[in-house]
Structure formats: structure tokens, C-alpha cells
Image (cartoon, rainbow, N blue to C red; front, side, top):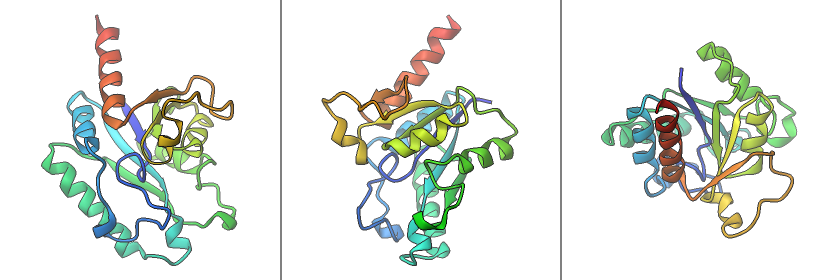
Amino acid sequence: MKLVILDRDGTINADSDEFIKSPDEWTPLPGALEAIAKLNHAGWHTVVASNQSGLGRGLFDVASLNAMHAKMHKLLALQGGRIDAVFYCPHSADEGCNCRKPLPGLFEQIGERFGVDLKDTPVVGDGLRDLQAGVLVGCEPHLVLTGKGAEFRGRSLPETFPVGTRVHDDLGAFANWLIARQAAARS
């Protein structure tokens, strides 16, 4: 199974320091939905792994989160794409759970649900903790320079990033890179 694990806020949709709390606030980044559709059409399954501590903080409820994801799925379907599953951590940072990135709990859940070893599965995110969580289960780290990742545009990554982290301008650039690598491997 060809699987890609994506962060949500800052990778697929615009992020906010005030949290994304409603479908009205959920806005896809330019080209992100088209990139997911492109990955799907190239045979890749896409899954979201997202910290949603706004739930634990009481900033929004599960119904609002579900409505945001319904909007994401609907807009993605209009592009001919799909996300196979959304995994999220509802806990605040002080709850000490294993599913909050940078810990690997969400990724372990993904591996169990799909019955796959996540070794070398691409994980794409806009922040360090997205990549750290994936690397703990053997994922291949990819940073996009959108959302929080924009601060690294034109700069070298700090040594705190996992060794081998690849950097892409955005999700579209990542999709193009992955599809090109797949084509090169076939020839």
C-alpha cells in the first residue's frame, strides 16, 4: 500500500495561532487539495494525523471538528481526490497522552488501522513535531514551507530536525517530487 501521512493545519489548510475552530475558518492552502488529488491519481492513499488540542481546551467541540473535516472532504472530492482517514489527538499538551505529536501514538494507530509497517512512509508537515512523531515509527520526513514551516524559507534547517528531512515549497511541490521519484524508480 502506497501511503502518505499529512499534517492538517499549515500543510493542507491555513493555520492560525488562535486555532481553526469552525468550517468557516477552515481554508485550504492554494494548490493543497489539487496536490492530494494528484497523489491519489498516482495511486497514493492519504491519511491525516493532526493535533487538535482546541478540543481539549474547550475552544470547539467534536461536531465542529467533524464539520471542518466534512468541508475538507467535500472540497477535495470536487478536485477528484480523497483522504482515506483522519486521525487526531484531542488532548491538550498537559494531559500527557501518547497520541499528541511529537509522540508516535497517532502514527501507531494509523499503522494498526491499515495493517502496514510505516517504515519509509512519507510524513509531510509544516513543523518539527509532525516529523519527529513520524520518524519514531520509521517514516520518511518531509517539511513544507507553508504554515509554521514558512519561517525556514531561504534558511537551513536547525539540527533539531530529523536527519534526512527533505524540504518542499508546499504540498504541491511535495506531490510532484514524490510522483517523479516513483516514476524514476519504475524506469
